[in-house]
Image (cartoon, rainbow, N blue to C red):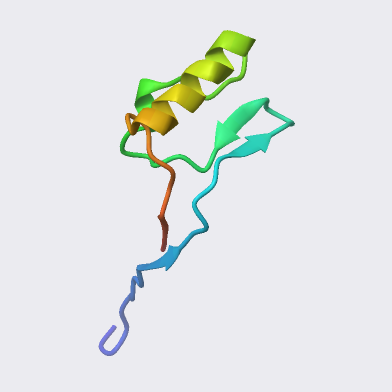
Length: 70
């Protein structure tokens, strides 16, 4: 049909940089998706929680700064 089409709009919004706890799933959120694969976000033990905190502190895992909205 002439004159018809589809538009796809993509934008980014700035986030407050902070880690959050999803209590329903016992997981950490708010991490940068590019680096979060190197940790297990599930808080299984005290040691796993400390490991996540140390990796954030040393910069191996970053907090998310932006969110892509489609």
